[in-house]
Length: 206
Image (tube, rainbow, N blue to C red; front, side):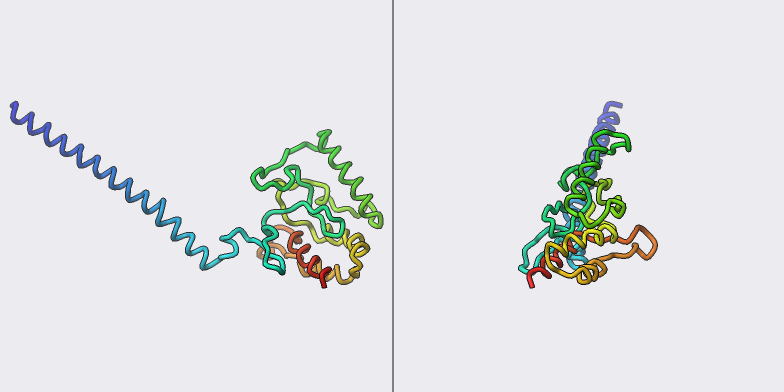
């Protein structure tokens, strides 16, 4: 009986050792596959099939200098450029989000009044009744790089006056950068402000 019991104990120890070895081996294989092989493979495929998107959809100016990403909005202060939406996080990509203020929140109301006042100052030729709502409201992420075509068009008088570029030329520039609905069905027409200003600056430099 003692001999049988000893053999059973030895077999149990061997089984536990084999089981433990299998766990370690499987863990090592999964670490290599999921932690090294898969990331390298997916990165390589992305670099081959969609290098621009894989590298952050970065935009460069005519000198080859990176000026930003077409996926993240920027704050443009220069009145001679097109302005984007209000951002409660000042377009800081690491802080994506918004305050989710309700329509009666005093801070939001004050921010809206300040935006309207600034609009009146910078755009005396365009009445408040033509001011699109997206120019004085925050997007859900606070990083939206787009505005509506109407929001770009109402800024044309100001930019034309400051740059000397004709309104017709600026109208064509806005039309050129107006993106349609996704798949022709989803979302709304939109204009990427960074792309638009990139071409505007190149137009001014001529």
